[in-house]
Image (tube, rainbow, N blue to C red; front, side, top):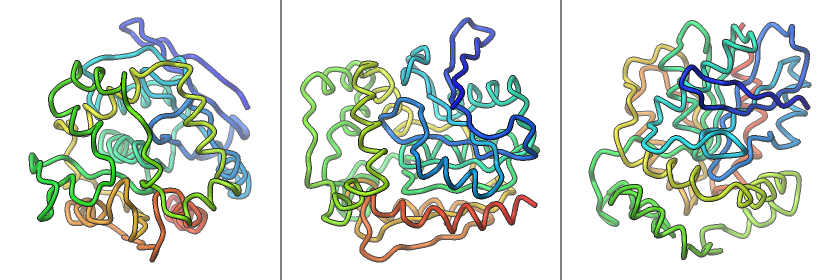
Length: 280
């Protein structure tokens, strides 16, 4: 695995990790979940190799050594990723994102339709519409532990204060999720834990970005977007995938019955296969 640091015009640095041949015709551009270090999980590396694709994983600002960028939006973080891709010579891509990476994969595709030929979004939150209700179909409805996102609605300072006393709620995960973390997708949990070493800025700024205007219009996207969502997810409930699909011109919603937030990753491989075929 190759790590590289791209310095942006404003002096900030974005770290990325890459596998596969640098002269490959196309790449999977991976946007990891929240939190992360930027290193791609081992199963994804295997899938990229199997498909003959270069793999580029982007550490968003505040994660994995990338310079924090308070006030960033989903769109601005996607522009940072786009700058990295231009620097390293990626010209055709599948934009893929897991959980908090989902909005950024969608935004990259919206900003660079000439680069991104297909999108794979796994358990992605939907754009926030100002509906703060916990019940009755609101954006937060069905979330087991929405405290961080609720604090983010009050601004960055409130979200930082929440981070200082935040405790993980294990009830967010179903038994099938814990089983997945004991198997090949344990790399996702290990990476989330390793992200603690870089401080709270990345997760704080992700959450604030999710509950404010993303800065891109999903309705204008021209690419096929493959959405995979567990019907029993307690972190990002199934309704979020339905909202995203309703906003897109070319969605494919793949529901995985009974899966939660981690177990759903078992459905990533066939979607990457489908995206590879769509990419041409």
